[in-house]
Image (tube, rainbow, N blue to C red; front, side):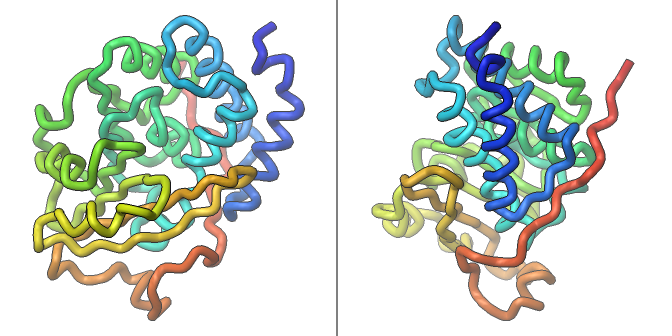
Length: 253
């Protein structure tokens, strides 16, 4: 039995607690699919070195819960349940595959140039019946299609991210970058084109002491999202919880 399998009851409890802390009410089939993805990542990581994190519980915290922590702030700007989402430089499929699991009616384009990581993602999609995910084994610069949301996690720099995503950006596209410490973020954002409107929001990842931030980028002149207009205030770290779909993703035969 794999390490993930041996500690599954404990990991299931941690996932449930962590999801609640970020305002998500995940149906049991969704939790099970997230844990199955974690188990696959742990199994493949032993051979293909997908991530430097080896311990399944730390994978849960630093990868799965880290990915889930962005759902509430993103949901104030975009309807994730019906969105087209591009995950640039997705690595082991983070955060794209967890988002696809939680929102089975979203369409996720997972972009990863490293062959072994793209292969892992395709195998995970096959085993988990994620029919709403397309894995592209290449660079984002090779694509020209407009999506609702372009997201990245631990990408090189904000300027590089915006440049790489240029072929995916339409007039209403929201860009979101998952970052660590705030130090240096303002200077990174200052290097962005002048038409970019930037917001930086602190995230609280359950059971993780390290800093996490989400940087949101919109085109200047684009009207603020309706939800934000109704709020009438800038983003904060604590907002109303987001509710994830309670039904499991549909499975193909």
